[in-house]
Amino acid sequence: MRGILPQPAPRARRGRYRIGLRLWRVGALAPRGWGLRESAMPFRTDLHEVTGENVPLRA
Image 1: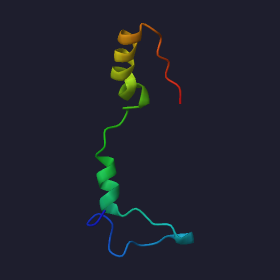
Image 2: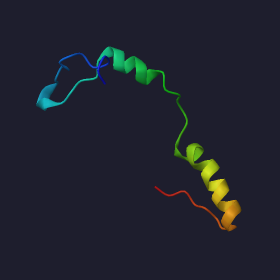
Image 3: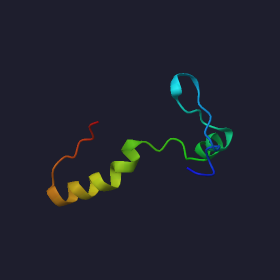
Image 4: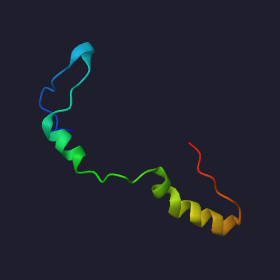
């Protein structure tokens, strides 16, 4: 994380780190709305085709 977290990284209360503005902006670039269901679907489809069984998605 060098270059993203300020050196030394600022600490919030109780010894936890705070996210700096630069890291916040990087996170904001991540696509939204791509959940577990969509990510797992290609693998579930392959597994269904191989086994012929239902492939439930459970957390």
